[in-house]
Length: 346
Image (cartoon, rainbow, N blue to C red; front, side, top):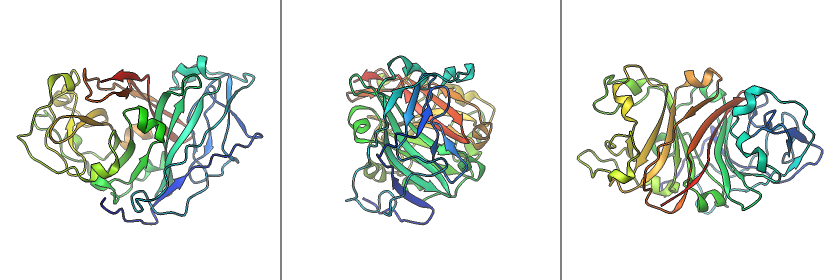
């Protein structure tokens, strides 16, 4: 696997699995606040009017402990991510606000007794923390939601490209249960200070040239992403049943990334990029291997919740759980991106 050059800007962390009974926070009515970033950004993971979460060794404003190991990819023999379990218990309802009704965890409120939060990996990027996580059903141990949470400081001061695949500033694994049972393997984030190419045939040929983030939620391991070659058309087309309705055939293969299929409406959009959900394919077009929200810092700095449609092919090419819903939730000076409402795909 291509080595990942460690630096002071990117530090991989393991989140702890200890539970402090005296620390209780409301979950669906108020944000699940973790001392998540660098002192002033507390982070939403979930919320509910009738539940509370016992956080892992939490003290207000204190960040999870940092591992002293290298950044992701530097040591192939490093231990797997800690799957820290946060215990959920019934608590008296304190208050509830209508604006919280759309929170991405509210759909799980009926079955929330015993819901677990399991952590993937966490990293510090220019002083801002990013972490991967999932919500697990107490009834059958299935995944309810898969997400990532990051400090808004990333949008306030976009980082320079990093040393990960295709210049990723972070590459963070999901917990083993997520990797084994769902579409998702890991998250890679790219910071595009000058944007990048726009699909051929777009009415606005520089639509994607604005600064934005690419959030690649990959279904394959990082070492396989490193091996993806760049390739120009003509390339094999994606089979009709593996191409989501309303999406165009993907274009060239980008080195250490793959091919990108965009919604057809984006080709006729005269405006510049704000938000979009991309479907990614391997160079031979055989398999969808990532879901990619592309988001500008202006959208994030508006500090508003938003949703994006999830591309839904008829055939995925593997048996797994696949999401049908994506929601971005802002709270506590941080965003949580969550995929949920999983269905079985083949």
